Image 1 (tube, helix red, strand yellow):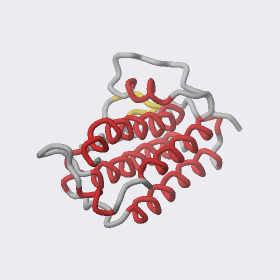
Image 2 (cartoon, rainbow, N blue to C red):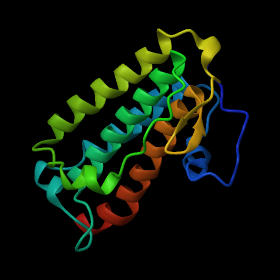
Image 3 (tube, rainbow, N blue to C red):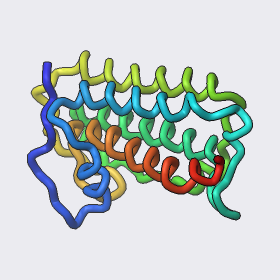
Length: 174
């Protein structure tokens, strides 16, 4: 089964920047690829690195990783609702409020375990759904989404934060 990239790409939408980072032609393959890349970077860190912030007031590495997981949970929940035909206008979420109530992972192993579980759940959601509804439109945070878009946002959002980690955090750890 192949889940292709969304046909619509309205550049005016906030999330389009994440879609542009996603790349690829098969969602399930790209979810696996970004997982491997993420874990290859994270597994070079120490548990102590999880508390590092590159500047005052910025998230720690552990909170940034928690945000990747939290956002994927939200995207998967939205995709589930839309795959099942729910037309309810779903609320947005405030990433800063989520971060303020998050705790950093105590260990790299703890992140890895949760990240793999969430990603596995997201993949299984698509594998075990009727894919004729991939382009069913629903609303979340006042914007139009489809399950296909939400799946690809998982890839692009993950890549976005992985690049931030590599560009802003890792150079200062060395």
